[in-house]
Length: 373
Image (cartoon, rainbow, N blue to C red):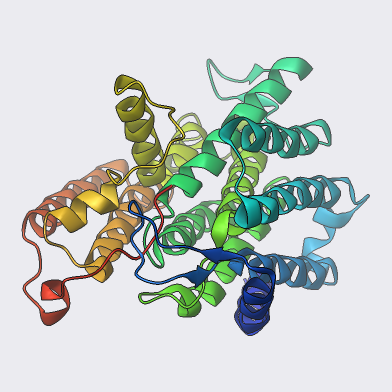
């Protein structure tokens, strides 16, 4: 655990300390999010926070490469290269989009390229825990991997609609996934789980380092550079765990080896996935492009109900923690206890959602402050 904590701290520290530099670069280069009718921010704001998050990722990987416990990840160098090649493409795509704005087909093509590079180099879903172990042929493996990465990238991109929202949700989701990956990697001794554990903990560090600059009122946005990178990394961590570890190698009935590899990726991304699905259905039924932005995301609806920005963000964090935490809890406690905790959490959060806060923060009339995905 000590090695992972060191990597988390390195990623968080480098991300936090390089944010002012990223902000200056954004201002000098004109990477500014303007205020538009559909936006939820009140003044133009720099949006290249993803560059500092990239620096945090690289610092964490560099440190990990020097630690004995992480040796299996970096042997041969093919897996880190696959990850970094996908990150390089998605960051370049995000920088261009943050500066000039890309149309949906162009962004989709770039996302496919990034996902395909990772898949062809080994970060791909090899099998699925269906009917025991269902092995995918190489073409199906690559295509299915690309689809999962695309869904993850756009789910995080869509949810990036309020100050601190996307980074916090990814931090919570990655933290929950880290708990299960660590159990398999360290407690069960499965080397294939080491990369998933490392990427998850680095995601937590990157987001923790970014949040002080991004909580309401934000001084810096992560932009598509950051949101698409977070989505890609979250997908990479879940793929390397759920799609590459044989369920039969996971010991212990409490671990639910047949179900958890399927449930965990869905659970940790439940809130972004629900928001993405609703957005696609809503826009398609209205005859619009499913990638066309609007102000009807889940966080917008919470604000329409009377919740402040801060409260809406915290509610979204709580839902993410509840769903992801309940799924991970099934790996550590009897299923009945996990379900009971989940039901109790749902009841509490439904009450909270239906009763907007009456605090001074909740009564503040917040001007539009942030772009919808």
